Length: 447
Image (cartoon, rainbow, N blue to C red; front, side, top):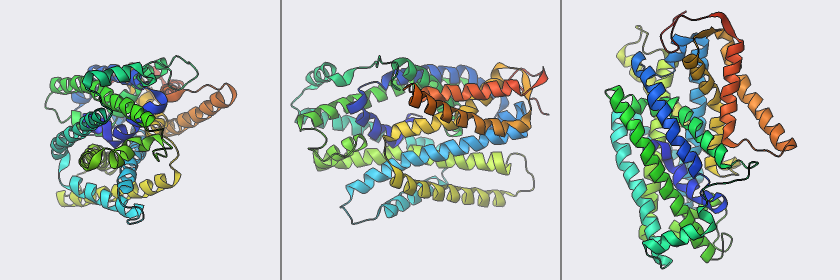
């Protein structure tokens, strides 16, 4: 769970962003804890009660065919874009470690995706869970080793390192400027909803939770994950502060040849911390990327086979035919990731972690509205209109965000996700049928 939540993006971008944003990420991390609690107490009981393989089949039970397909489609869009961004960053860093001009970027991307394809093709969810655990351990060890080596080069013991970080400008948790995207209230509230949609409404993350035998075990998994996520992110931010002080001591990013904040950790690990630490960094980075990338491929394949092909309801497909479809789907998604990685390589111009969450704000918003309208109300809706609602809400948010920035100089930040879900919820309310459904929100109600 931690490995899939973190990925290579966190390992690179979270420490790098400390240079510009201090510890302003931590209020969002604290919001994650509240989001995990809502998942454990609201969503998991629903999923276990309905015995779901794909969590989006709930939408068909609750509202109908078109809402179901719209929800599943937005998951596919969200997961493909989000996972591709994460994988791109890792491939970009790995390419930077190779001697300049020796291997084209597309070759590194192709080999990386081929290995992930082979790694996930036959293993299934259980294999991925066990290997993810080992890989996440290597990732965290790599961060710890980096902190220790940098502290030694700076002449600090542990206490002196903590004192240096806390005395610096980089350790501030709370941005008090309301106009900034990183204002602490925006960050905290966004963290709640980002967790609900990117974990609770995400097939990849829920596939791991639903592998637990009982609801109680799954809830225990969620609560322990929430605590661990706080500790691990605090470790990454501490690394970021130490890196920022290290860069400051060596004359700044320009003097050290660091082009962007996403390159701070990779550049220092490669050129300043010695061969051993550089190798450990690479091992940690690859270990961080495989849980996220492998889980994305597996969950996308599952969602397509169940939600679009109908594996769980079709009797005309033999086991051999299903296996062939699954392998083909797996290969197609791998190739799509490869193409998107090349696209991101061309257009990259901002901190990648911001891009990941910005994509989530637009693509997960309709899922947030769909699920919570189903849970919080008893109404049925005009099912055929829901795909239009799912497209219109993100477009409306895009216009709203542009107007707020252009005219009022106000940034919604990740709270745009909340408005996206709210617009979807309101549209469903306006398109509800005359009388409430007799079902109790999450109960099966087939039309």
